[in-house]
Amino acid sequence: MTILAQADAAAITRAADVLRSGGLVAFPTETVYGLGADATSGWAVARIYDAKGRPSFNPLIAHVADLPAAQREAALPEAATRLAEAFWPGPLTIVAPAAPGGSVSELARAGLPSVALRIPDHPVARALIAALGRPVAAPSANRSGHVSPVTAAHVAEDLSGRVDMILDGGRATAGLESTIVSFCEATPTLLRPGAIAREKIEKVLGAKLAAPARAEVLAPGMTASHYAPNARLRLEAHELREGEAALDFGGRLTALAPPGAVTLDLSPQGDLVEAAANLFSHLRALDARHVESIAVAHIPERGLGEAINDRLRRAAAPRV
Ligand code: TXA
Ligand code: MG
Image (tube, rainbow, N blue to C red):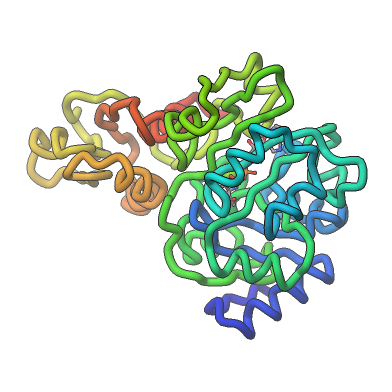
């Protein structure tokens, strides 16, 4: 049975007990909802893969309480510490060589010599990590390949009966997963565009981020088909075809839509932050209308547009 609870102090204490005994707790972060387990327990982490129905053991992000906790888990080079100080708590994940005495289980790292770390900027997530007193491993709280959840109701749709507890802390505001930067290569590398725009990170680094040599290998969760709604997506659409629904940006497709067409706009004003926040919930809403095909408007590639377009390309990719 899955307990669904408002994330008050008593519920967070109970959730930490669930984690301590090896259970699974879905909890809100500022990006999307996470499916959490005690990162130090291989048994607990194994349940995450089982609940998500993940085809393989992708490495997971370990969510930690503060910078010293991150430094116990990984050897952070100076540039990584600078990024941490600029963006933590917040939607930045740092991948770095795992420290010899680190506590994150081998399974959470998928056997890699590196570890992915982040301090989330959400009071419920931080209270939960503090109450457990250990890192919390958490991928997005959806079934494998589905759209990431930004509300507790989305989590329940995917994982009810498969997790022990869902903490409801309202809507995740960023609506896009964290930006992942790796410090395991010769130069800092952008493994996944996300809720912090590339330009902001490059400004703090004083250098351009490198592109991963082989993305599939470096960030194994980043397979082409991912974040997929049931409907097919047609990207860079300039008009609505017969029977298509529209996922619009800036109102252009909506203006051309025939009467009665299903249209949802990521941001009528053309604001990329608003569009990011609406992306996954609009995809879910279109699925709920049982549309078969979605025409997606052009989204500019600047700022958060890079991450939005990355998720849309994955959602549109041929399914495996
Ligand atoms: O915003 C987020 O990042 C959300 C919230 C819950 O924090 N979490 C999330 O986790 O998106 P997940 O598991 O869906 O994505 C984690 C990504 C995967 O693509 C994985 O391959 C990559 O991080 N990753 C984790 N550890 C890694 C490592 N050691 N080396 C390279 N990539 C790694
Ligand atoms: Mg995910």
